[in-house]
Image 1: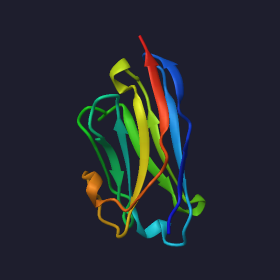
Image 2: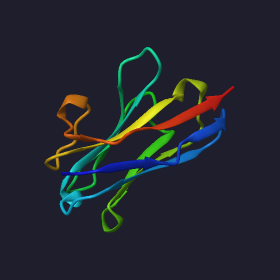
Image 3: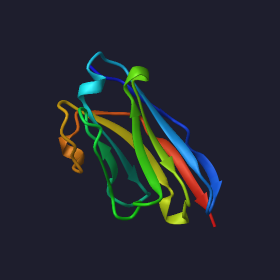
Image 4: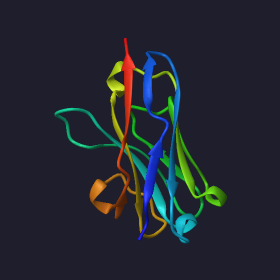
Length: 124
């Protein structure tokens, strides 16, 4: 069983930055691909970024490319999402997810464990 706990959300003005953290339990963290997703009110859960469990390769959604960066610290069992140049449309609950295996995925259904989410609100 893997438990994920997100932190770092909050209220920020447009153009500002936040860094989300996701602390994971479990001895196989370094082998697992991780992902960040977000969900705004009335919308479906949306892929944001993913990082592989082996090489640390990353992939970001077009909507955040160049502004957000996913990274991981395997020694700390933590994955991060650095968010810069935030826009009001980035407002959502952000979720961290883990999947068995090292291969990245953009599909929520491919992930086995989810955190409780952290709210990010960007004011204009």
